Image (cartoon, rainbow, N blue to C red; front, side):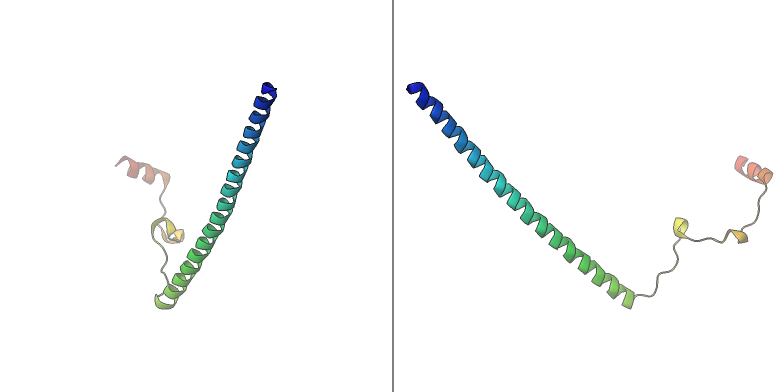
Length: 93
C-alpha cells in the first residue's frame, strides 16, 4: 500500500513538473513571437526614416559626382601605351 502511494505521488509530482515546464515554454514562445513582431516594426520604421532622409537629400543636395579610385570609371583609351620592356625597366627602378 505504501509503495503504491509513493509511486502515485511520484507520477503526480512529475506530471505537475511537466505541466509547469510546458506553461513556461508556452510563455517563452509567446514572448518570442511578440518580440519578433516588435523587431519587424522597428525595422520597418527605420526603413521609412531612411527613405525620408534619402528623399530630403535628393531634393536639397546636388547630384553626386562620379567616384574616385576603385569607383571611378576610367577611359583607358587616353592612357599612354607601354611596351613590356619599358614596363620591366620601370619596375626595376
